[in-house]
Amino acid sequence: MKDLRNKIIVFANQKGGVGKSTLCMLLADYMAYWNFPVCVIDSDIQSTITEQRKYDDSVMGDDAPYGVQSFDICEPEVMQQLMDNAAAQAGYVLFDTPGNIKEDGMAVMLGNADYIVCPFKYQRKTIASTETFVKVVEQLRGLNPAMKAKLFLVPNFVDTRIGTKDEWEYYKQADETLSRYGTITPRVGYRAQMERANTYAAEVSQKHAVYDAFNFIMKQIRKEG
Image (cartoon, rainbow, N blue to C red; front, side, top):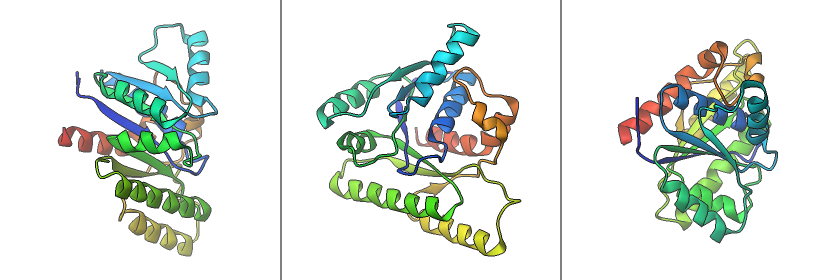
């Protein structure tokens, strides 16, 4: 299944620990499995995906299903050049980003994205931080009328066995609030195996955890062309 249309997908949230790098890897694995042209740009200062690729190459060989490149967030002019180059690539270009959205280069990256994927957890502090992030995205839209990015908000690491009735009512209200700024995807369930995501292929349990969310996202992307 080939798809040569260019799409830039940025994984972002100012809150750390929400699974940006993990979901970015797993979406790249998902796309490679379905033979979509895909590459990953690792702009996270922790270099999680870059280091994972180095390890995967050492264990699995060098026949990787997609490319991973490391590129630090830097001054806006250089970031704009990077985004222009990404827009010229055939297929899907996925960006993993740092948690600090105050970097000037982040505004350029978000402003040039076709889609922003924002994972978040059902935790009060995480939800509050995510609400701040989506408001910043809206401010960027106001400053940049050409900004076209559609926002997907992904409830991640969800375990419905945990939480009180009042907490789940709060999470429901949080979904309603966040949905004013973007589209809430199906939830990604908690799996211990998610911590073992790699850059070659997803495990069966990982595929099951992300299937509904990724299928939803890809249907929306392909429907919009």
